[in-house]
Image 1: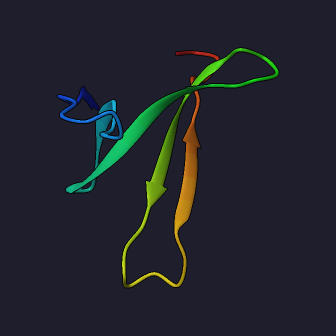
Image 2: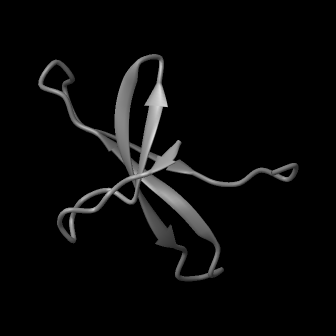
Image 3: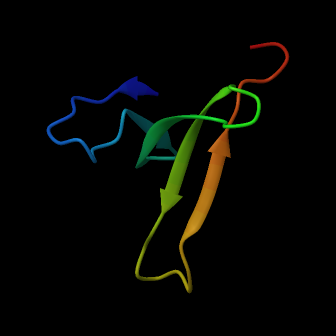
Length: 61
């Protein structure tokens, strides 16, 4: 994962490479716990619906 150069306010904060596919990830903060996480939305015309994913830091980093 690398920090993305933001050319607009809606551009992703990070780029995630997964098996040769590049995904955008946005930094978010949980309202109830204040914990930071990354939010990913996978939207492709071949999918029946968008897929939403949340990446959190595990106990061992």
